[in-house]
Amino acid sequence: MALEQERDKGEEQVNENFSIFRHQAANVERRKNTLAQKLQDVRKELSGLEQQVEQKKQVLRSTSGAEVMSAHQFKTYVTKVRDKKVVYKKKKGQIEEILTEREVLLRTIDLLAKKYQWLKEKIESMDGTVVDPVEQPMPVRPRTAAPSSSDVEELKTLVVDLMQTLDKRSDQLAPLKKIHAERAEVLNEQSEHVRNKQNEYERRRAQMEKSYEEQKQLVEEMKQQEIATTEMIQSLESQIAEAQSQLSTIDGEDTNGGVARLKAQLEETQRRIEQLNQQSAHSIDLTAARNRMAMWRGLQTMFETKLAISNEKVKMV
Image (cartoon, rainbow, N blue to C red):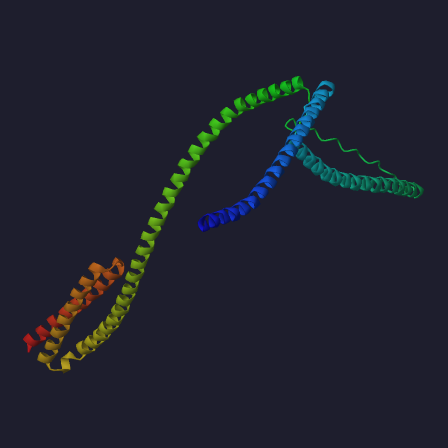
């Protein structure tokens, strides 16, 4: 019995807990049914509204013939309208500025006309002559400018005329282009010839500068040789003077000693002649070299004559 009572007591506690859950489940089910009913009502209302919108769209299509905008299209349209409103305000401000400037310019023209009339009357009162202003001719509108007409046929005619004019210009330019190409080729050849001439000129200039330096060095060497030769001539002239003095006093001197000195001077003269021969082989001034050679040969002849005279005197003794 005790076990049965404990079992019944446990089942009663479980039934009490289940009753709470069943109560909550019943509440949830009731709310679910309520929400489902509301959702069904809203769907019916939405379906009715969609039918009304579709009917109104059909009415608009039948009356105006235009398509009904969607929400996205309507938002895009509103954005464009706002942008156009901003542009409109900007253009309106520019137009107001232009109108204000126009009023100022009209007032300026009026003042200038009055000023011109006053100056004209003043000049005429001073017995002057008024020269009327010359109207400037209106500039001719170029054919390549934007066309003033929007007629398709007129625009086609204008395009055809322009194409024909372009073809004529191309035909006229063809021989000119050929002449230009020929002259350009001749110019290139002449330029190449000038460059070659310039290179040849530079090469010859370098050679002439090199030759000039060599000739300059040779002239310096010849000047030094000329100085040395001048000194040598002066020395020989002094020796000739000494030989003449010896010749005048040879009778009073030792005959054998005088002959020996003459022989030594003769050998020295021959040696100098050989040196001059060697120098004249490398010298450019042939006339000066010949003159020096003639002078030394004259000295040699003189010494040989003196030596012969001395030998004859020795034989006579």
